[in-house]
Length: 342
Image (cartoon, rainbow, N blue to C red; front, side, top):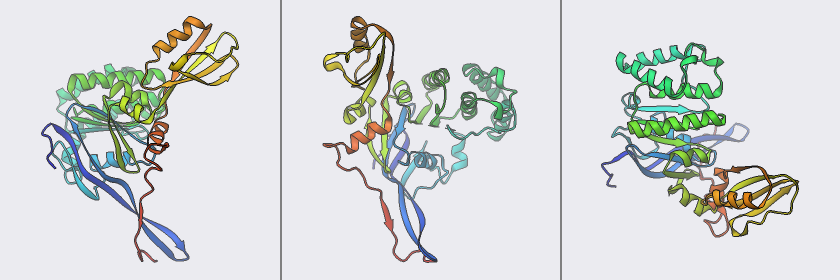
């Protein structure tokens, strides 16, 4: 396959197979091969911000681990900045940054600044560059007052911002983000998203983002890839994903008093009514503004909010709904006859 010269991340029919032993009887085990990633091919250009989403167990984290060199592909070809991650992991480490939302790279019992000093030495960052990057990142992510606080005393949002600084101290060319806003409050999420937009705009950092929060994708990424059962099933704009999955957002309306179901014509439909609160579903690809204006002009409003569709629901509807792709991909396990009878 001819690879575009502008491609920074390249995967060509990459797969990862794990051998899993299962007990089938007394002193007997059966070896099964589980395909976590199945012949995935895609390219990411330098400076792109791409969402990489899918249900739990779809193969997202396995892909990220292969891109960082933690796991070796079972087949296919993978390159990041022209480097084979599994063969030159140390060399690649100086060009990538990784943030795992549920795991920290910081030293738990040390003050935050001590973790940064250790990374200064580990990555052999020139002193001037380290100080410049640290000052800039700490200011942008509002961490100055927390530098002397032990990591274990930080809130989840504070630790997440601390992890992002740690991942960027050495000026990586590509940043892998695995659930970077999980468990964060609204203010912390907004701060992290704004920072990532500035980072991409100012430095052209390539970003590959895995998340279950569609707002992360909508606010950061112009392109989204969907993986399901180890296969790439969608690669394009988020609006196209909404159209393919016929996904819907929900407008939650609190009225001054209990009223009959709100009439919004073809723009939305009422799906639930509880006293003065009503839930209206409308296409996720449509703007909420006209619907809100319509309701505000005709009904006594107290409050309203918009709820985004769940990523797993969007994917499930796209893949498995009648008229879609049928029953969806089955669990792909291959029994190896006669293996592992111990």
